[in-house]
Image (cartoon, rainbow, N blue to C red; front, side, top):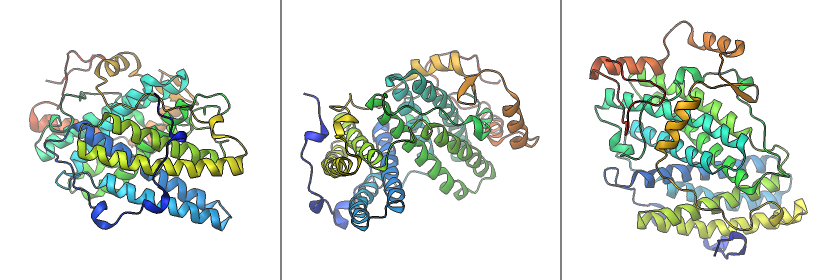
Length: 399
C-alpha cells in the first residue's frame, strides 16, 4: 500500500530532542561504504540545511511571537537532524574527495529527477543543469589526480562516468539568462514541486560548500577552480529556485518543505544499503511526520485550505540513486552545445552571452581549462573514467 505521510503517526515533538551521545554518530568508512550511501548523506544534509534556512527566513517575516516559537522548536530539531546526517561523513576524507562526492550527487540525483519529471519544461531545466555538473565532476577529478595523486574511481566507483560535459568555461552567463519560468502552483503536479525543492536544496548546499572550502586549499589552481565553479553553482541555484511559483504562501511553502523531507527520508530508508544509516533515516522520518502534521495544521488555519489540495495523496516512487550512464550519454550527444537566452534555450552564442564571456575571462584561459592542461602535463593525459567509447559528443583525449 502507498505510504501517505499525512495519515501516519510520527514521534511527538516533545520526544524528539537528543543528547550528545545520540548525536555523536559514527561516520561511514570512506574506503568501504557504498558510494550512493555517501550520496544520500550529502543530499539529505542539503535538504536539512534548506529546511533550517527556510525556517529562519519565515521567522524573519512572521510577526506572531507564538508562531515564531513553534518554528524555533521545530527548527532546533531540524538542526539536530542536520548535524547527525552531516556528521556521518568521515573526517578522513579530504575536502576534494568530498567535493567529488558532491558532484556525483549533482549528476545522478539531477539526472534521475530529469528522467522522472512529468513537466517537459522543468525536465529540460534539469537536463540543462546536469550537463554542467557532469563537467564539474571531470574538472575536480583531474585536480584530484594532480594534487592528491589518486583517481576518482575510488570515490564514484563504476557508478558514474567521469568525462567532459558542457565545458565549464561556457557556463558563465548573464544573470538575465539564468532565470526560468516558474511552474504554476494551481495546475502543477505535486511531484514537480518536490523535484524543484530537492534540486534547489542540493545545489544550494553545493554552492555553500564551495564558498566555504575553496580558500582552504593551498594550491593556486585549486583555489581558482573552486572560485570558478562556485560562481557557477550560484547560477544553478538561481536557475532552479526560479522554477518554484513565487505566489505560494509561506504556509504552503512550509507544508511543501516538510512533505518533501518525509518523501526523501522515506525514499532513502527504502533504498539504503547500510543498516546503521538506514536506522537514522527511519528515525528522522518519524520526526518529520510530526513536523508535517504541525505544518498541515498551520496551513489549514492560516491558508484556509486542506493539505490534500496541495499535496499528493501518497508519496511518489522513492527517489533513487542509480547509474544514469546511457541517459547522460544521450544528453551529451544532443544538448552539449546548448546555452540559455531569457527563459529558453538556444545553440548560438548570442550577444549577451558573448559579452559575459569576454568580461569574466579577461583574455585569460579559465581555471577549468588550466587544470586539464596542468594534469596532462603531469600525468600524460587527462583523467577520465569511461565505461564506453567514444565520447558521445566526439570529445576525445588529447594525445
